[in-house]
Length: 192
Image (tube, rainbow, N blue to C red; front, side):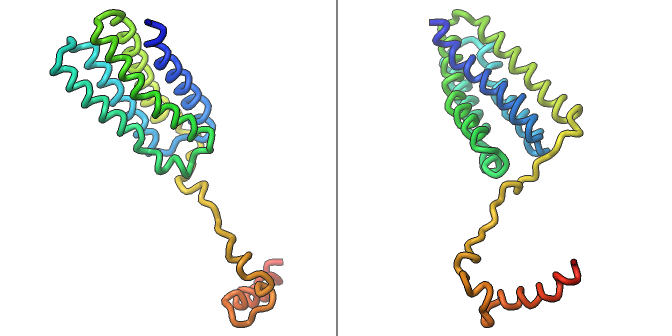
């Protein structure tokens, strides 16, 4: 039973390790992620602090559920921008982390209610705390020379206009492309 409850935490930890130490270091983190990721971690830490500091009761369960719901929503806040700066593998990893997040919080709640194996929650809380300090110190104080990926770095150019013009690209006199051709006749020799 203990292994079944630990499995989501272990899998989530492995995925977070890959996300942090491979993808984040590979692409660098813009300022909004350097601030946003610690905010995500704080939301998770609050959930685990409730488990470690408050005894299980119906009232405390409501506090825990509210903190968990807030955390589950908060961690998705960056995905609108991640879709522009992350490759498909990192996006898949994020989706797996989003699936695992409520499962981890649910299994932690089961441990809390059973009041057995509470040391697992204490260890997890310590790990989360260390990770938070790492995120704040490394990304905001030490990693100042890493490349920052601009938010719009993966914006694709729509080349459909070239397909629509077809042969008219070279021959049309009644289209704005004729102005581009005339301009090119002047600019290209000057550039050369």
